Length: 615
Image (cartoon, rainbow, N blue to C red; front, side, top):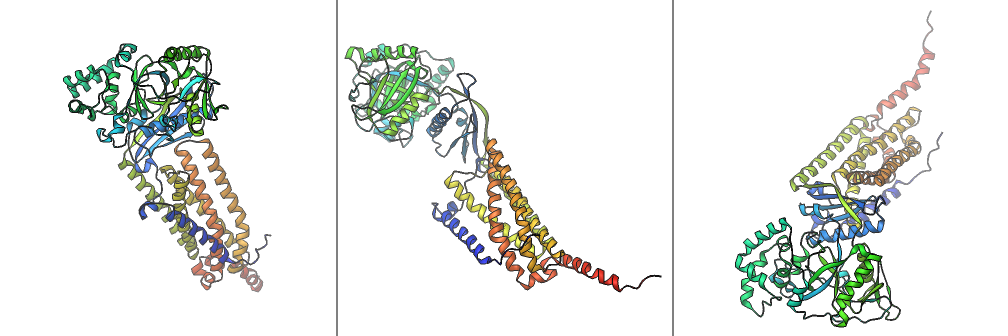
């Protein structure tokens, strides 16, 4: 037979519970910002407030080999940068499992997110001309108030490779110690034109271009197409008036303009060029225009691709003491790289830059200081973080992964609100049914159940807010289901405890002495039952993805908080109730029928002894 616990002091457990509530409340209130509604609002998933979700499955282009963690993390970072490039910085991009990337944007519905999984393209292109970004000079000239010219230290790929200084990075044979050189400028438009092959466009591009031409007008289009050099609208106000229609073009419309027009017209800013649809400059056989490091570049055809890079790493040059990025190429890629550097160097007469273009942006534009027949070294005033990130972009920028869209859906805010209302209604109905049953069957003990559920609900609510801030946990409709299921887990703990209490009373103990004995016997069962639930939730969490993962996490959190309430509130409050007169009243405590059954059992043998024998 289990032995009762030593006399306990319920005030200690209740004090610990109160301390937990105070700490959580302080974190919730002082750890947030904004008004009281913002501080007390948990982070809700897109199925509750509307939005867009896209699930992408990675496929390795090298065969049946599964993608590596490094490839998946680089893909996640590039996709995250793509999403942020759409102006939706609140999006969440996470890796789920070994081959899935899930993009979620709560609160908004943006169909462009469904196209972000296109394979990133890394290209090496010779810089033909360079000009300043007019949007960075005069932000009011662009519809966007914040031009996207990269700055040193930014987390975006276009900026992370930039150096902290006025000099451009330089590419030299590995092991040499060439100092950074200034960016060359002043290339003539004629030279650029002669180096640029004739442009051919696909039929769909031609159709879109015709629509843009109609929008601008034939006169403006012809004048822009005839420009032979970048237009300085500050020096020629008449051209500013002529080309003002370019201000109203969207990034999608800018993407179909001829490359020469994108470069020469100042109202085609880097902000618009950076926000072109993914894959706008994918064709390596066409000259393009791209931005990076606060400049707009006119670029030649791509003669080296990202797949030609076999290895990229960062390190400190022992001679200069600066961080550098080292490049190795495949056998075929090495020949193409050598030819490109020979063309850019041109016997020392040109020293042109070679732009490394990832998606729509230039991540680095080193100056070629010599013909490079072997491994290359990109030097400059890199920081450690910049050098490491550039090497990662060069190593995985081509991304030997293709993405297949497994699921893409848009949820309106109205539908999300209806989901939220339905979840709250379901939780309220479940809670109400448990409370009604507990009062009907347990009477005074039902008050313990109700108070426990209220405390559990408050703990869950505060935990949701804290977890949303600390680990980005968002409550989805599946999470709501997990919390509703947890009501059944909590009810099981009550049933185990109170039925064990009834058993102790049936065995002849008083209600007051039965409480500690019932707790000792029920405690192990409660812990075992909750442990099984936690294990099931953990297994479900690690083997599942998407909404099922949210359900498992919510169920696990609710189960842990239920154990906290069981040990720090339910048992101590029962100990206090056992010392009250109300608890000893059979009608009030809900133990009346058990006491009556015990009285009948105790009186039974005596009645039979006094009964006269029958003839």
